[in-house]
Each structure stands twice: as C-alpha cells, then as structure tokens.
Amino acid sequence: MTSTLELRATNGELVLAGTLHLPDGEPRATVLMVPGSGPSDRDNDGYFPTIRAGLLDRGIAAASFDKRGVGESAGDWCDTDAGQQASDVLAQLACLRNTPAAHSDRLGLFGHSQGGWVVLEVGAADPSVAFVVTNSGPGVTMARQELFATEAHMTAGGAPAAAVSSALAGLDAIFALVRSGADFETVKAAAGEDGQGPGNAAELDLIRRLLDHDPRPALERLSCPLLAMFGDNDLQVPVEESVAVFRAARSGRPGDLDVEIFHGADHRLQTGEPSALHPDYAATLGEWIIRRLSAA
Image 1: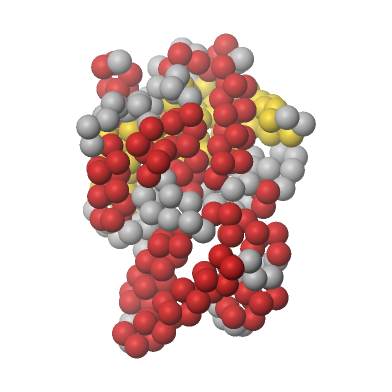
Image 2: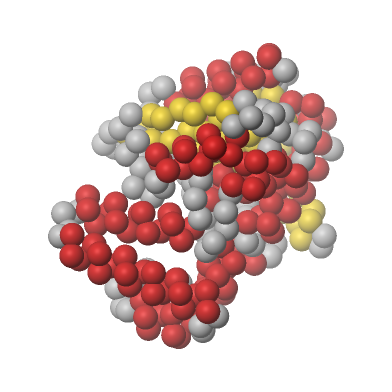
C-alpha cells in the first residue's frame, strides 16, 4: 500500500510545502517533480497524479511542492525567474535528503515544460543528482517558444498566412517593448484587448526576467543521465528545434542523453478524447529510471 509524508522545505525565510508519495516497500528511487509555468501547486493543477501513479507502480517514490504563494507555500510565484525557481528546488532537494524514506542516494529530477528549464539548472548545479527528466521542456528561449506557439496555434486553426505574419510581427514588437523596460500599461496597450499580454505589473516583471532565458548553458554543464520527452503534436514547444539543441549541447559531454518522442501526443504528452497520457508513457519513464540507476 502506498503512503505519504508531508514535507516542509526552507529557502532562507521562505517555507515551501510539499508531499512525498511512497510506494509499497523500499523505493527504488525518488523523483522530485517540478511543475510548469504559472501558479502551479504540487499536483501541477491535476497533471502530476497520473504520472506519479505510474512511478509508484514501479516502486519509485515521487515528491512535489506547491510553488511560492500557491497552496500551503509562502511567498509569491511572480518573484521566481528560472534561477529563483532553481533555488527553491535546491531547498526541496535538501529537505528530501533529510528525509530518510526518500533514499537520497537515488534522487532525481523531473520537470514539466518551464520546469524543464529549472531541473536542468538544478542538475547542473548539483552533481549529486542521479538523473534528470525533462517533460516537454523547451530547448529554446521563452521568446522563441512564444513565437512558435503563436504560429502553430494559428496555423492549426486555419488562419491565413498574412494573419499569422502580422501576429508574429506584433509579438516581436511587444517583446521589444518588454526588453526596453516599458511599463505594464504600455505593454498591455500594445497587446490589445485580445492580445496575450501580462495580467499585471508583477507578471510583466517575471516575463521580462524569463523572456530570453537560454537552457543551453545548463545543458552543457549537466553531467548526469538526461531523458528528454516530447509529443510530436506539441503546439507549445518547437520539438525538432529543441531536440537539435539538446543533442548539440550534450554532444561529447559526460552523462548520456536519451530522447523519446511520442506519436500523436500534445504538450502534456496526452492523446485521445478525453485526453490521457500516451499509452507508452508510464513504462517509458519508469523503465528508463530503473535502467539508468541499474547501470550506475
């Protein structure tokens, strides 16, 4: 029977709340799961439980925490660019290492979407991390990702080429304003009533800090095994471009790279209607972790 332990991690004066889910028997490993963008809780807004169940079925423990200012965690999620999110995850790792049930010698990271950037930063900073998994983690900057997503969604919706080009030009103009330090009212006005602009000044400040974050330096510093998982129907992340960046950054460096692309799967690696994780997902993730730890 599975069980849970409530966790509290401290990053300076900040307290982050989470849960450790334990399988029946001694865990083969523990995975710290890091959510994607926005005010995500420890379940990544309902996405993590199914993934976690697949891990538990294979004897792998899973932990996750509420982001700053979400659920039972203190702080404000808008205060966290990629580096600050990484500092929170490092504090969560420290908490798990002080939790005997977590078996800290077999502790790895899983990051979904923007969380993929974060786990790369943490894995590069902490060589004791046993493995890293990125789940639809972009190999490009936020600016490049947003341009791709705008084009992909508009094209999938049947928008004419001229409308797509106009939207991309408008988005580039907004990015230029953000980089220039323009205030919230200016950026919001440029985005227009139907534009995808920030919701408030705090979100604008966060976007400004994240817009040109490049995951490549962390990819180059990483020395543990890395699994990068994508869906070939992802309209949020440029998959082929990201895979090319991952391969180039990892070439000739310590720590193997494995790439898995799931046919017909979207940004959440889901298929079908209603959406569900790709049928091969749970086995691919769990067996990769077990195989990597056995090799180590």
